[in-house]
Amino acid sequence: MAAISTKQKTHIQQVDYIRAIAALAVTLYHLGGKTLPVLNYGWLGVYMFFLLSGFIICWAIPENYSWKLSGRFILKRVIRIEPPYIISIMMAIIMNFFWVAHYRPDWVNAVCHLAYLNSFLGQPYLSPVYWTLGIEFQFYLFVALCFPWFTGRWGGWLLLLLSILPVFLKVPGNTLINSFPVFALGILYYLYRVKGKTLKGTLVFGVLIAVCSAHSVGLAQTCAALLALGILLLPLKSYPVISFLSKISFSLYLTHDIIGSNLVVYLGMLLPKSLFFKGVEFLTGLGVSILFAWGFYLLVEKPCLKLSKQVNYNI
Image (cartoon, rainbow, N blue to C red; front, side):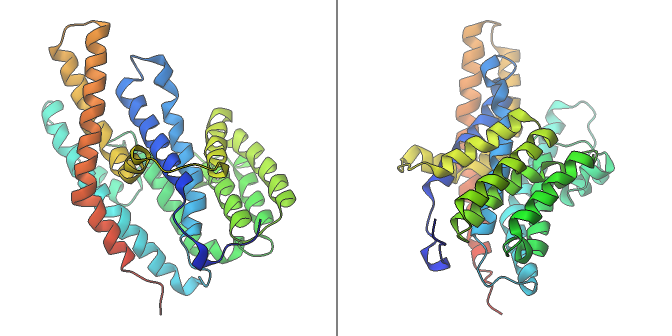
């Protein structure tokens, strides 16, 4: 595949599908995984997001990127991610006042959330999705420092070397090291699609990195990541529902457990115990989660997205 220049970069429809599927899968898992066993695999959507980040974060970086631009890269990501994240943390704390008797905010825990240190300091998470944001932020730091290296001549070898690390180096907690092979698969696809790396070399490195991934994070997680990679390769059309779910995917990911899961629990306390009403609780929680995420996107995430785009890479 020929390399794609910056001017040729346009919206990638397949990315919308991955975002929509992954966010919806995680949401369905948290809202109905305990009731419907078929939804128990929804958590694997996290690894679809990880692979997508490996590709799309690199895709968004200009070809003339150097370490001098690392500060601007991190600033763009912080403006894009941090305000919605902070507001969702505030929502989680407020929700605890309603659900936890004699609840008092743990400010040390809150600071750990803001600095993405929960995993390193053994602090619990206010929401079950927050652990992934810490790994994503570690990946941003990695990209900011190492992008010029792994996009060069020896990029494939560097990705493979770093992917082998978690096979032998077991790091406790949720860290980038353990999940890096999944991100590496996304980066490898970027090198093939944008930098014009050969198909043969990409396949060889891809198979080896996938083996490392299966050993590091697990076979099911690796299969979920490869599913996302397969979606990137498919010729897919645009549909309004996919575009909508993709647009609100981050907001839905951040807020569905805080809003939807708590609503499902609350309705379960009010409604009769039957399969029918379990379905009512689930569908109501899903509908409210999507509606709330839409509002959250319009009021919080979209302004941050626009502001982050105003930070350019021109020096």
